[in-house]
Length: 178
Image (cartoon, rainbow, N blue to C red; front, top):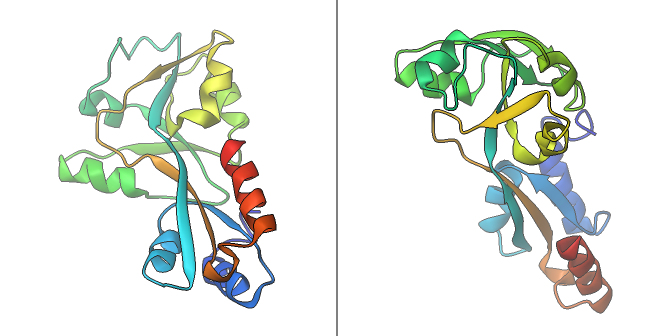
């Protein structure tokens, strides 16, 4: 899925809405949504926000009940990415404070995060929904990030042509209520 929607695929998704080959585009992030909002051919709706959290092992003695930016930057980081990543928006935010972090581990999927974090001093910053079900198993704990991050906003986009179509209205209702 990530490979399918990489690069210009968001524009391809909007093109698919235009030509009718795609009924509904579900997205996380701003790129497609920003393009759709300024275009009267599309209708957009936010579904929900998913706040960012920091996840650490419950055995990580370098982190207390809260975590300041200096501690956050000092810890080795685990990030989730489909390929090699050396910098993200988090690095830009830390740099503004004169801080740098080290990405020590890249996990290909969110399911790997709990296994890789357990019993280590690693920290990972992820959307709460990706990790919440693993926290109850007792090996991990969540902390507020020491910076203000934009929550992941899950959105749907559809063609204005379909806005009043009963079947499409039903589809959007099912997605919204699920």
